[in-house]
Length: 152
Image (cartoon, rainbow, N blue to C red; front, top):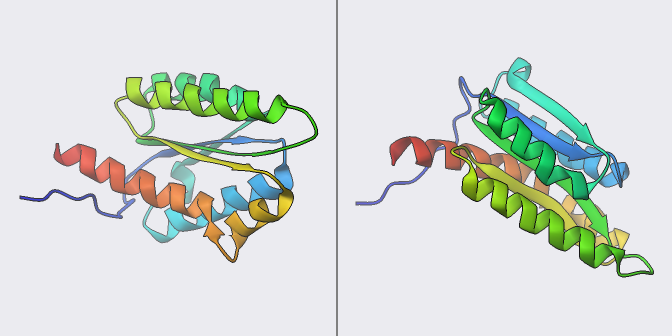
């Protein structure tokens, strides 16, 4: 048999943990996620947005939000754009590693919605441009995983 998750947010409570850094991109990811979640049945009052300074802080805050125990899923949204130093490599790697660890230790979905781009253009394309909105994609992933985990 095959068990798949459904895209139904009715009665679900979702936390969005999002970076302030690169807000021109991240704000679009947030809007995409919120719009998708509400269209799929999540009550707007059941969405809680936590803002963090940057991607480095995402794992710590996501872990605390998971431990709070009042959410069905957590979306981590951010954008790291390569600059003139290797700072990008450290931040992107540690954000991904930290969020993966939080997700593996969690009983609820913790969804990675952090763009890691070499320039601003690909970030714009993935934040509502011609490639879509990764905030919306993260929201879809969260709802599907919530449903799938309920069936396991």
